[in-house]
Length: 80
Image 1 (cartoon, rainbow, N blue to C red):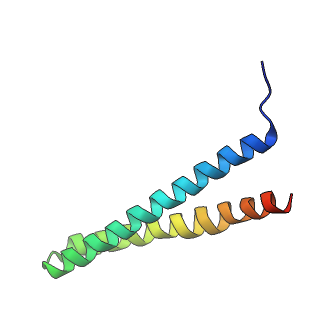
Image 2 (cartoon, rainbow, N blue to C red):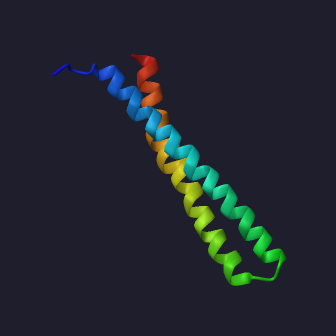
């Protein structure tokens, strides 16, 4: 069985993290838009739920995946 170079594995992992971060951030923004629309329509329970879920998704996308996972891996690849 052929061995996959470590660099290729790192790139695939980084790509997965970046795609996941972008997807979570996009979902967070869309939930925040839904929260604003719900609040404008008077559906406060739906708006509050969408607001909390949107903030959670944005945290996951920007902080947990982007800042804490992707950024250090990108720096490590650039420095190598």
